[in-house]
Image (cartoon, rainbow, N blue to C red; front, side):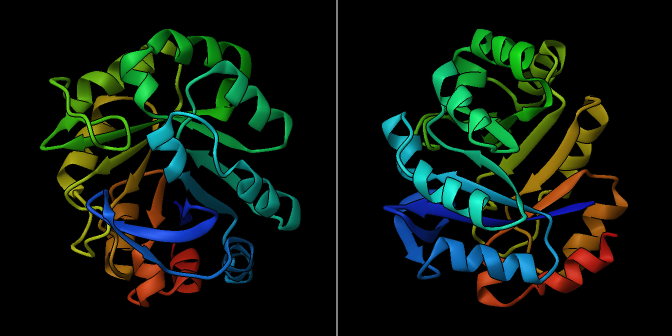
Length: 237
């Protein structure tokens, strides 16, 4: 299983949110690049980065920060937040970003996802974020009546190979991941499933690995010191 240390960006600075609430934004490090280099030293191969400004403005805002990390580390970089057009995907693909995560458009504009998969293949991942099992969009500010499993099956049919699933009620809470939902999703589709939200300690990492998940995103647990990144990477080898 892959470990994805996370850096969420507002105004170029690394922050964490509590349950996706922007009013709870807490700066957790001074500099994204230096933080990424620490993750690299700990043995991480990937980094998960989110343009929180972009998710609200529906456009690329912090792309310079993502490219700085890509160009100055050996890390593979996956990014999400505010990606609404093929031009955005092309921009990141041409600049060496390893995976582009489509979120709100998966529900609102599945044709874009289909076109993106057709052109860029496995670079494209889909982020499915849910509250109470139902998909939320636009930086988690809008709900829907679409169940997360239903959307995942639609994305599988389109040809998406990687899905990142976030239970919003767990995000930033250090209360453990939603194992039952993740197992249900992993069993429902053939896609690679990455767990996001709630990861607290090494026991959570082991539990997710034992369920056969593709990856786990770790954010607050790393910044608060409840999870040692080097240990997590070693356990998952």
